[in-house]
Image (tube, rainbow, N blue to C red; front, side):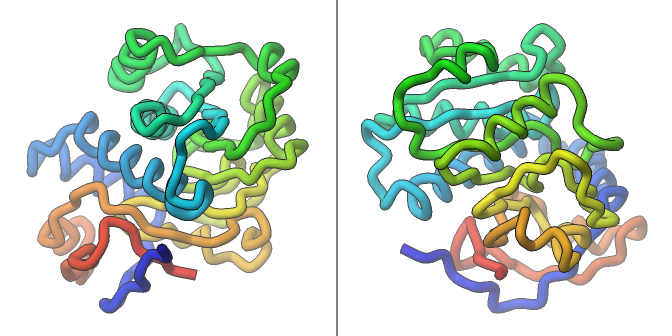
Length: 246
């Protein structure tokens, strides 16, 4: 079932504005990161199920590529939810020992559910056909070209026949400038969060971004009108937690 298009105007924001949204959520509204992460992961899992797995994820093979921060944590939430829906999930994390506290909490849940956490070398030897890759390697914290294991994960994903669904941004793209670094994930679809980021509309990155969707992480519309943002945003998600933008 396709996701609906928005019926209200939607402004685009920069990375700096999204950082301010996160700050206001936590400091003013007391909506904590773990709540936002849960909402992001739930939306990502729903897009995976409805748009890529024909509404029936049972028995499908999913690979989660995750970084150590919030973007990776959201991807881990999606992996947990897909597992509860009958999906076979494997997770590859850039540096599991370096995860920040709340993503580390999500990882602990996956360990308790006995979801395999595998190395990139193990992933390269995986013989099962992969049905979908979820990209949560690097979010808006990107600073320069991906390096090390993150770079190698991107190369691996781009070499697969399976489609890739990115969370917030394809890893390797600046959400403010739209600069596409080498390497960059080539996603078939991107689920961005709260409001779309200006960098996702740059023409040169459209082949990497794919279809653009917008997910609800429960930002109160009133928050956007705060003096530090001064944005006019209505109840965007009244009809659906996920909207189709382009």
